[in-house]
Length: 492
Image (cartoon, rainbow, N blue to C red; front, side, top):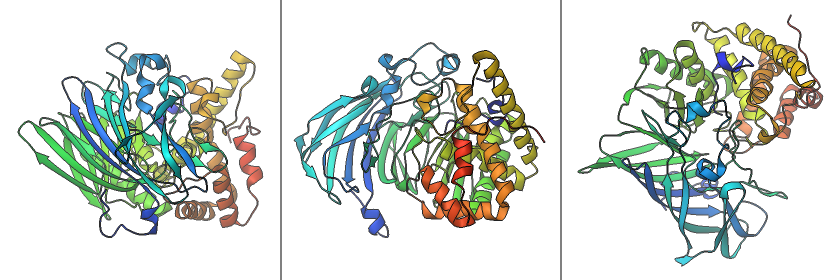
């Protein structure tokens, strides 16, 4: 998720080409996105086309396919959907700015395809198929679209130092058997995303003065007279994002089988930041299971919150300093395991990646004690601040909802979301580890990672894995925390 730094989050008041070697059964059951994009730096726009080789992995025959159009959350019609009023001045330091995506054409088998829009601010695109798409069948859909980037310090937009391209293309909605396509709209709380792992072949053209920070296992850049074109291959990733800047400096080192790169322009200790990323990859690989990709990019950029995770790439806010910077790098790296490799519905079960990622960050500092952030500091700080949150909310509102298992739009305020998902999550997992012991706890997490690698997991999957690995009934424990029965936690 968009990570609010540790020291802020604990304070209530802070507000179609398949490559050889990849053609296995799992490969053939994934979608392939082929995107060609050209960025106009002067006008902050882009023209793009995309061919999606889509496979129906469900048990249902489809008459249409639904796509998220996340850039439309930045349109004028969707005002208020990307951030709270408290954060608006940070998102739009130069005044309100709008952007979006315009679908120019959709084709199937060389013929124009019918399509329509649905949801708030045209947040989904519904493409009609010329004939039913049965289970295990594939169809290629061609899109042409234009992008307008807002002047916004956000996932999608440009600022004074960099241009962020995230969630910028039509993204196929996850289909859930018996429920249909998951079509939840954008939310200012959390990360309103849910997607399947896919393969990507991408070509990005941009001005020659810019440097690209991108994810990918195969990346080749060609220089032209006035532009560069970077061609990228990605396999088994949940989303795709990249960042452009004319200010980037780069440091890279290899850890295990992964090249870790740090893109930055304002950092007095870039070696330290790179080492933190390397240490996080090493620590989490040892605790949960190997990091499965050959590259990982930590990218400093203009971003309103502490950071934001994407597969093989994370955004780190250029507003962070010192311990905050290290903390956010660790948190976003933990997301490579929880959200990146093991996915989930971040809109309706945000605790499943955010609470787990926040606690994984605490585990990192327990294993790496040279950072000045201790495990006990995090847990005790969480207990203290959660108590303050409850007391304050009860004083102001007379009651407080302490449940964790609810959708993003059910959190009335950002502090309510932060305290119940991040802060309460630390306390819940610390309590669980104390009850079952560290060995069983980490064994259950590594089992969860192994079982649901490159898949989407649910709350029920998580609980079932812990019950299996620990040999005990645990549904009562999780339900008491997730549905708010555990309300007030006294300090020891």
